[in-house]
Image (cartoon, rainbow, N blue to C red; front, top):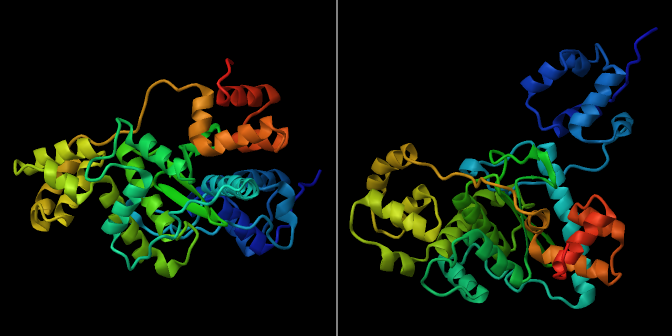
Length: 377
């Protein structure tokens, strides 16, 4: 019996391979005949084609089309490790962005119909404005006390709650949806911001250290204030990212608060103490002191290696919280409450509500809705 081989158009093959998000070396390990496929000397077998579709997370039939459908998501302004511009986007990140876009699209339509205004902070500043002044106005708008560190022991949750109270959707997750086997890569991205009709969703990758999550959340808030979402022009990347980084530092550690709490003691001791007080990493706190003139760039360069050699900020660990707590964090409290309220009032179908919240059954959805309304589950 002859082997069944699949005829895939060259540009469709390239698109599917790119959609896997895997490096070339890994692709060739999984598909040893890949060079021959690219050159047209050979074609993949049916099992190989199905395997490729699965890796690319696209329906098998899509491989056989003449043109790609379910287009790639444009992403150019993401904050990555080292603030590098992103290249190819993995299937996990692409799916996360698409799910976020779908949630925001529903919320924007629902909010507009209900007369819920978009967040007033959106596009309230430009890159020509001083980021520290914009950060101070933002703190005031969010009700954060002037000249003090962000409140609470969990500053990420506190800032997220303040943003959501102002109408911004904030999602925090380290995996794709509720699939624990598909972890999001910090090396690929730390956060993104999307917008629909003035309504905004901010996503923070919680696979990162807690201090990095706080900075990412504040950084993405900078994108909101600028009205420059995660999907924007390449030409603006460096300027906007630098502005958002300065905005984030000023929002988390305002000059007035740093000046009041700084003591002219050993630099390493000061950095460690202040980083714990403000919720920044020690390295970020060091460069904030440089920016504010408390130490020189040369002195900072001499000690930054010691900071990196010392204890590093770790991601959170421990037992998993209840499922409804995880879901609220993963989709955002404001979105969670809006969907469960809409479902309980017949304003959204059971199927759509379950899909948006990642509920696998009616019973699971009912439990989530009951928690939102304060009922026992």
